[in-house]
Amino acid sequence: MTKPFPYKLYLVISEEACCGRDMLWVAEQAVKGGVDLVQIREKNKSYPDFLENSLKLKEMLDRYHVPLIINDNPLVAVNCNAYGVHVGNSDVPPSEIKKKWPDCNMTGYSVEYLEQLTGAEIEFADYLGVSPVFSTPTKTDTVTEWGLEGIAKIKSITNKPLVAIGGINETNVQEVMQAGADCLAVVSAICAASNPAMAAQTLRNLIETA
Image (cartoon, rainbow, N blue to C red; front, side, top):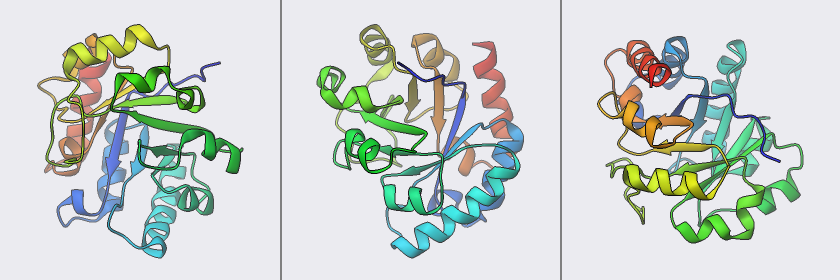
């Protein structure tokens, strides 16, 4: 059974993406503007640094009752008591996460091939990351650029909640939602914005009116 997925605006954050500004400040501003789910993605940090940043971020997010998702690292997720974890094709599969971490509230799974939608792992995912919708400089190792047609195609095959990510900004929010996304994930549209709170608020308003 598919779990409820009430989230609309999903921030994917890292120190690097914040352009030299304090990551906790950027994340808090984003939450004040309307972000309701946050993933920390730190590809280049050691385990202790990743854990430390995750613990600080979770402490702040807990005050706003916003869940924290950890990218690609179930050990960090367990040790900072995160809400969930997000994995891709080359990471620990969702079935392993459910087995080793039965208390995990949410497992996200990036879809890069249509074949994944008929694979066994899909059943263990609580939502699917459609990645990327449009090509983006923040993620260079992607396989398929889905586009709007890709979102619609995935929507027709699965009833899992779809989180669209990749090249999403205020110019294309509404068409991505109308194509079938349940939630939009952004990196630079908020992390690199001069006013992250206002950027989040603009995106959230566009989502709500789509």
